[in-house]
Length: 382
Length: 251
Image (cartoon, rainbow over all chains, first blue to last red; front, side, top):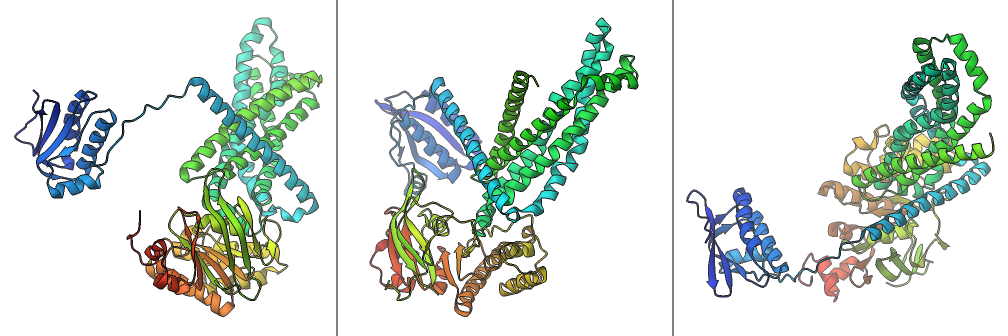
């Protein structure tokens, strides 16, 4: 039989057969928290061996001291044994010890645990789908509220918190210019590089201007800018409104007669709506410049040839449709971020969760809108 | 509680509060008279903060109605607020200074020019003992000062009714006592009606004229009246335990 008696330790665990029906673990000495890890692992081996229907009592008569931490572990192991259908009690404890056992609920009866049925994949999938639909419904309801509020604003323009408009435009617009320029310049360049290899084979070097011009203005300029703004401002809006919600600031505003829609959501969404087309225009421009750099350096083009071809290839409508799309993107970013922020519940953790979901939902929506635009414009032959 | 002769300031009729799956209180009926300091008390989780939110109109009741000055309050955020509210953590807008926080409702709901608004802001801050703090940000204030600034903001539009959520929670005894003094001053000198949610016994005995006690298990009001009388003579063991800080009858 296993024994674990170590002279240098202040405790020991010793399994003994108490009676024909079962076993006991005889505990000796002082069971204190610094030794908790050793005590746990030694008890664990014995506990794991105990079979269903058997008995494994914890014999405490030789125990001098137990502190709270170790008692918590003992009580946990006993409860676990009972849940597994092994009879287990603390026996022979002195009166003082019994009080600690009671304090840590080492004397309550623990029923056998019923196995919880694992939820099937289909079940989880269904729940996740429902949650997604629910979230989509919330965003749409929010859009409806926003439209109603916007109509109200047309009647009483003063009711919007205009003071927040310009600072928000500065934060989400002007401050975002460097990153928008950098990213779109690089996107233009990378795309031109990839195309250059192919175009060279056919001697079609000049068409890099068509490719970059159309894809930047129609597709990538608006989309890349929207992605940057979603990560910068969308996340910021969601986190800001989420913190305000958690701190009851939103409630306080409402009790002072300021609806969050007009006071917080409108200025933010409007600010995005105003700065996004400007940023997109800048993005188009630097993207084309990125293409030019590649054209000059590895396609033997001159800038006048590049720009002449660009002028032929890109119509004003290409630019306009991109700008129009960017405004829809702006609306989506602002609405989803604010909706998620205002839906925050709980504490700091809730703010984090809503900020994450705001970015994820927005990215998904942006791609969806982009695809819709592309299909729609193609179908209408625009 | 004897029904007052004046029409009550707040009339709560058959109010049930909670959420779809949890009912906190059912069929609550009570009224708050003008000039009262009315305390809603009860142990944690009994729904007293939710009751306050329902009175204010932040929480839609499951059933029943709340009328304030004869008007059933269903929607807030439309028009000038008919009362002031101090939230538990103060809920000052973190992006604005204390002065801007107090000026906010004044700018929106009055025609006063900026110098007049500034004068009122200063007066409100003086009233709560925070003169000279206009330009501080809420994050620079202690918990007690934040609550007092929030009271100043709640007072901005000269309401005759102010709601306070747990004014003494998280404050040291001296700050809590100062807040109690302030509440009494507002009530006696300015004639304000105050509805206070708290479970601080010292505070209750000091400020309350009337109280209702909510109970979690029975989801109802189990006592109402003068808290001192309830302490001394209530026969309900739950009420007795609460007012005497005892656990004799706790489950």
